[in-house]
Amino acid sequence: MRPRMTVLAAVTMALGLGLAGCGQGRGMDGADGPVAPGAQPQARDDGPGMTAQEVRREDATVAWADDYCGAVSELVQSFSTMPDIDPSTPQRASSTSSRLLGVMVKGLDRTLRQLDGLGPAPVAEGEAIKADAVSTYTGIRDRALGAKQQLDAAVDEEQSRAAISAVRTPLEDIGRINLLNGFDTVPALKKAAAKAPSCRQLTTDSGAPRFDPGTAGG
Figure 1 (tube, rainbow, N blue to C red):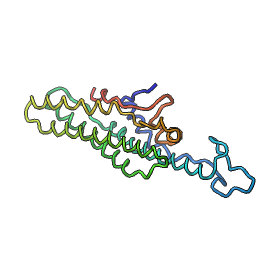
Figure 2 (figure 1 turned 90 degrees about the vertical axis):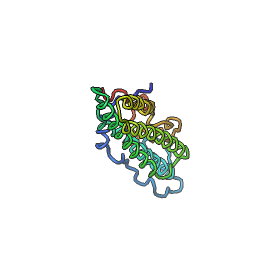
Figure 3 (figure 1 turned 60 degrees about the vertical axis):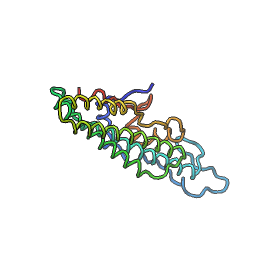
Figure 4 (figure 1 turned 90 degrees about the horizontal axis):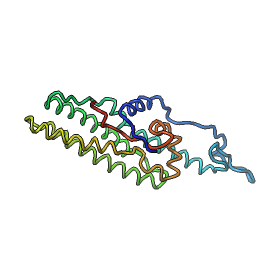
């Protein structure tokens, strides 16, 4: 099952992100220290017999996943400030649609900046997943900005109506997004996402979150 997020769910989870801690520490006394001859590496709760190097790699993967999820969370947070579309007149529909797209573009810009600032992924597949996300979000951002510019340039009712129809495309694009696309195909990232606080705010037990922006604007 792969549930879709309604705007209300997106807002609820966005508000909860501020309550999540920066990490979930575990006691690992001696985990990074030398192992005495003949002794076994210290076991962790989730994996018996992990070496110190494996522990560090896992912790680095969790930290990277947490930062990745923090980046895509910016898009979720943008939904909490999206205005409703007012269909009372073509002019009102045009202006409120433009504001909605402006909020979306800003949220995508924040997500893209944070993704660009991520350090190298501890697992090679992470770089490909990030590159795919950047490409997807950039394309949606450019289409949303184009639709906004078309709305802002409309000078009469006919142009406003035509421009409003262009709003649907970026909203539908957002609706198809899987915020953690690719994580489930990489065991290390799937495991890391289950531990990273920011990722846990975005996921459910049964699948990956998606937006349903079609509920925005009433």
